[in-house]
Length: 210
Length: 210
Image (cartoon, rainbow over all chains, first blue to last red; front, side, top):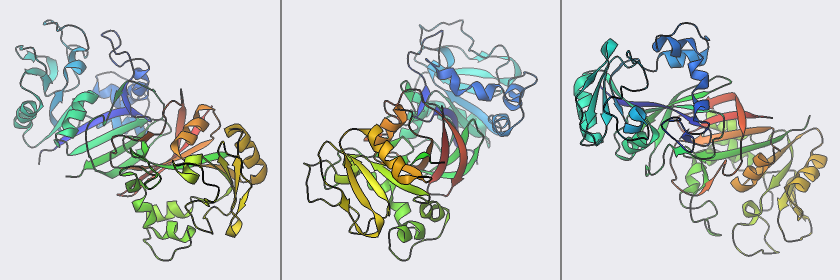
């Protein structure tokens, strides 16, 4: 049955992005360090259409990151960053984004669906998270719906009790400031169902308790 | 060789104690939930001189919590809570505390050493963390020195680069507010060296990178 899942990288002090996020630096100061290990892996590179890379535990985790997902929900900032809304913007991922599925982008700006190569279509949803999740569920059928990020959208989903699974990739560095996962989510209880670790990242898969 | 270690329980959103810590409720609102699983285990109970308890992964971790430690360093609040300094206070742990070793308590109040049963002696250190660590190292010999808590003392040790190992017991609940681990520690890099998980707690042992 279709579940709502989320995978997100955070620092050991709980930040999913560093401070001072800008259009030029959407992950904020130091935020790229949360992803530098993943993007060196063969698994991540393959799922993004790039050859080569390291084969290790982190690679296996990265390779399966988009598996079994039939539709995505994404915050406005993750699609377009902080700046003014630009109608011609086509996302950060090039013409063949790694999603290969419909992606529902939360934004106040109406826009026609944007069909990319390889099965990814960005749909722009103007009436909130619940509506985006409903549309994503309908599109995903038996497959999962994944909240692609960023942290504020994941927090919104946690606060709404909409998440079934949260898969944290805990990077053992401190960022000290920025966008915090779990900020304002209220009382959440999780259950760890699987944990694997490399010397670089601890991957903890949690079921969200209702 | 003697190392400086620390074991501490935190919520998934990074708090080692809940909000509104008082003398009556030293762990703050909800903070006791960080420890409720541990204190049900056979391992924890045995190390605190109590019979019975559950045998599971968490129990094995709890049983080894005080192993190999030759001396402890502890913050004032962990020894005596938030209230005014009370010369007759003998700690929360009864006449035979579970430390069975010297414990160096950081406080601005001078006080004679307090010898308890079972090998625990509380020494009151008035000239700061570095001095406490030095005394603890001398007392521990080849054994480890453990920072017993609370979070602000652990953060002070992290900020000073004094910790060699940090063993986090991550309890999968949110507290939303309170005393945060990693607050103000600056740039810290860790390396996960061992991870074990139960359905209740994820235990991650980190080496602190220099």
